[in-house]
Image (cartoon, rainbow, N blue to C red):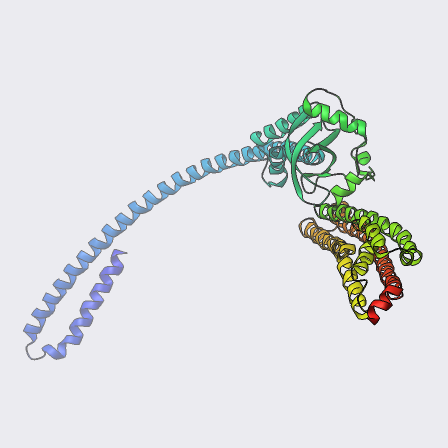
Length: 474
């Protein structure tokens, strides 16, 4: 390698000298001197370059040695890491297998827990204590609806809810609560619960059998009425004087199939508040009708006898005797008052007598027709109130449908019962009142006819008397 460098440097020097000869031709010695200087410079540079190359080679050789040593160390470390990696892979595989086994156990525990939670949720939803203990269902619902693995607090809450439910199933509970009445509205009352076998509601002294509505989480009053013995037992339990009452082991089937009672009180309750004004109208109309019927029948019986006397007796008596007789009957008989009015104007002309009798009859008509317009109005109001009850009942029914849907006909039965019962009761009150009004009106017309007949008969008697003719002739 040194020879090659020297040869290259000599060649370079010769080339430089030859190429520089023309330039230095002027003075050859000067040119030779310069060439020698250049050669020395080149030699010096070459030497320095050679030394640099040698030094670089040594440095590179040392660096290569260091790198080889480092590579050897790295290879040794890599071998150690590979061995460690293989060991970690083996350990990872072992851990994966252990984790898979644990996941199977965890999945089994989660499956069992969620299955138990779903069973508990169904149990709590249909349990009679559910409406009064909503926190139990909430604890179970958290497990059912959560996607995460149930923790120990959730599992503990599930166990506590089931234990509390088991305790309640063997106890009698009397506490205030809410329930849906037969009218579809929410009511406040006292809930008497006999474990998980029966539930009753007390409101204003009335006892309802309760049916649990799981989808709504509340009690609803059964449409049917309880037997009297059951009602007495439930009242005794509520008052704390007894610890036993009839149980329903049918799961609510017996209560759901109770038949509504047919008594007046049950119908009044089912008909709503508008039943009371209808009943009031009925009682008022009955009182007015009976009073008017008794008065008119009493007047009519006396009038017929008195009218027969007027026809055959007044003409044969003196005016003074006739007046005394009819004055005794004046307070009791309208015909007596009509006849007495004519006797007081016995010496008057035909036109005056006709006016006197007409005026007397007009005075009697308001007394005879007293309260008859009121009776007619009552007969018209009763069916209108029944119609109002129909509208109110249908409004309640549609309100129940809006809140709970139309899937349960028993929830809508309250509004429908109110609608039908008020209509039925309104017609039942109005028809007798209108019939009685018609009978009384015909009786008044008959009495007025008798008064007109008595007036005509008295006119004939008075105008046919000889004294009257002689007096009118004078």
